[in-house]
Image (tube, rainbow, N blue to C red; front, side, top):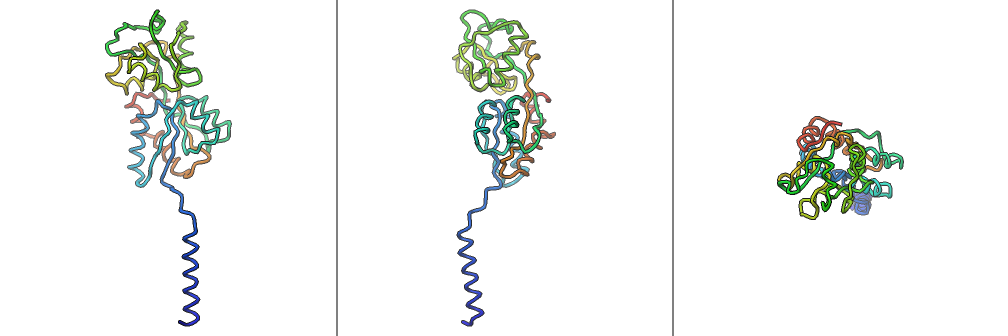
Length: 251
């Protein structure tokens, strides 16, 4: 083997060793979305559309109460997109300097009463939730659905005496579905998703507590362009159709 051949072989071997020592490339096709618990059904459908539109991508969700998610993000939890059930918790994340750009409102929601199928307790109004012996469950005050509950109480001039206050709206719904509570205050979208598992009782005071949902790309997003595509889908016509089918109103 001549000198030139030996030199080329050495160069190839060195490049091979260096390549073997290099870190594996990041998984650019994975997206982590922190979203309010009430968005679970709609966002699961939206993610299916997103992965169809963007082959090779994967969306991983963390669904929980918006207050819990905001706390996790401000404490350093990694995520690409945040969708909250109110502006207050989005503002906490914004004030922590974690947003890559302005949050965009994309949906709104209101409360309704859910009771056991057939409404055995004959609940007909918000005031009926104060009946003696009635086990009522609501969201905790720091959660968006809990804040809305407080506004409704003020509008109705009625104070509830709940047996428990939950950290996310899906927990309220579950307690009614499983018979642990006689009635609960949940979003219209959660009641619709529950189907025949509950009976819904609408009440006019709910119009005084409309929650607007914002969404934003986070500054620490591993793939900002992919994260923005997800936000664009949620806020665009296709996302609007899915959200409307789930019972969400326009922002």
